[in-house]
Length: 89
Image (cartoon, rainbow, N blue to C red):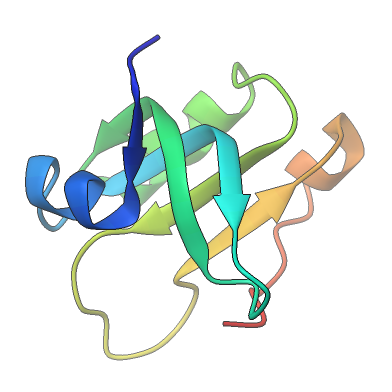
């Protein structure tokens, strides 16, 4: 796996892509602040397949702008991997 990056660095390196992040950190508002990119790509379904291989816990985020819908999720165990939830932020 790669190095731990800030969210801004991740957005710059992987513009308009879905990223699976491990070793993630969040601030007091539950906003993602940093993580290590486990997988990335432009196709959301392909990224969801990568989640099955990601070590827990992991987070999934989109680095671009979306008009609505799921922008990402965080899972702590295998059961949650099959049940993505909307993030609070």
